Amino acid sequence: MDRIGLMATLLMLGCIAGAAQGQTATRATESSITIYGGYRTSNQLTETTTGQSVSLNDGASYALALDFGLDRKTQVEFFYSGQKTDMSSRGFPAVANNISLRIDYYHFGGTYFFDGLGSGGYIVGGLGATVILPSGDGLSTVTKPSMNLGVGYMLPMGKNFGLRFEARGYGTLLNNNGGLFCGGNTGGCVVSIKGNALYQGEALIGLSGRF
Image (tube, rainbow, N blue to C red; front, side, top):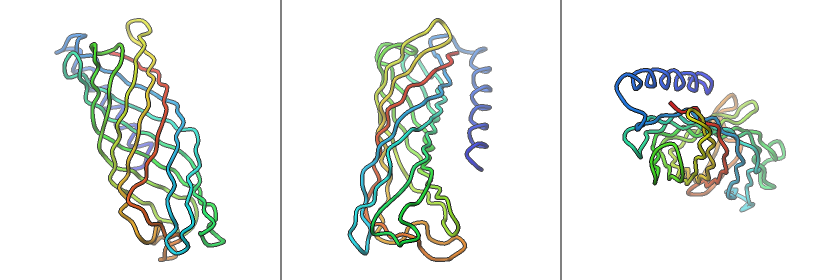
């Protein structure tokens, strides 16, 4: 399933859950759908054969969160975040000094509001997968396990909306000492990376529809 198909499925699940919840629960178990804009930064990795650093460009990101209320302070969350960026290193082959790619996170987790759902500070976290999709012939998609942890603040805007301000950190388990983006049309590996993990930080601002 591609990214658009997955996001559409999650939105449909959110609508179904919201309709069911409206019949069986009170406002105390508030749920929400949030669309974010953000900015993401990354740590550096190392090219295996040359020892040169490998950089991921910082830049704009986007995200979607579906939060379903469990009680007065806790929600279950389906979270997606994506970023288009470039990976570059002097240690790459001349044909691959700069690789355009998209890094997507698909996580399942939850939020906990300190003062009750829908207002004030909260913590958030989740587990799932990081999907790295490079552009170009002969480059294959990479999928690795990952997690996120973060803090946030929701500012209510009337009864049915709110602004969310979040900072999240992501950790992706690479455990890698060899090829990356192997396979595809060429059957080989375009770049060779070593490193245990990819770490990224993200600042987000989102508009929530609350129900």
